Length: 347
Image (cartoon, rainbow, N blue to C red):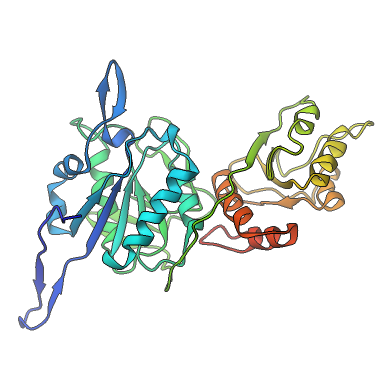
């Protein structure tokens, strides 16, 4: 990969010390930011070289090289794709000072969570960005988001994995898409933004630390998420027995399982557990997390030994689960890994 922008140097006032620019690798995967109309629909078509031409200011910020592993709408992205992105970063980690990934917004939070678990304790920043409108349009958020991503990736204090969007720097395990069309599409859930980018400068609110990265190259995607709705039959859970390694159940409010005189849900969960399926409980409510110790309907957590995800986002729960499943052999090992704080998931 050849740099798209030539290196420049900054000299101190006494012309003695010469410091080279940061060298950042762009990993372009497609998404709205790289889309153009085709047969009446937006389709990823814009190359990374074209993307960078829309942001000439980058020439004064960092040196950039680029790679395009695939062109995809983010709806079509899978954990295997994010594993491939992680592999690219691992293979190039020693050659670059930071990494920027352009990605569609619909599954961006899943990507940021996945990379937060596949790449841990990385001193060099991994930054994911994208846009609500294509970069080829005149009035778009794409150019600002791409520029800000490189500004953050070039910052001396940047580390770990983050989403940079609408001037916000959001922890990879805390990002969630909360608006479908507005430019301020992403929110940091139950955790402050790490930084804001204002006037081309990074204003930090939280200084994070990292040192030697740990890369993981295995995942187990035998995971399904089920959202409870009022009146749902427990038969839905029974159908999952023996088919998945883990089931994430999105319950109501602070959390619980419907109970009746037949104890249908409890029986279904016992069947899942007996078959070796891990059961992780969470809430459908976006903020403040679950607390299954409040109501009697939540007492089943202790009765059956269920794992409660508390205030983790669903995206982070799924990302952590596919990682922990691959790294564990027993239920005890899985639960230990799942409860281990990684990034800002603060289990």
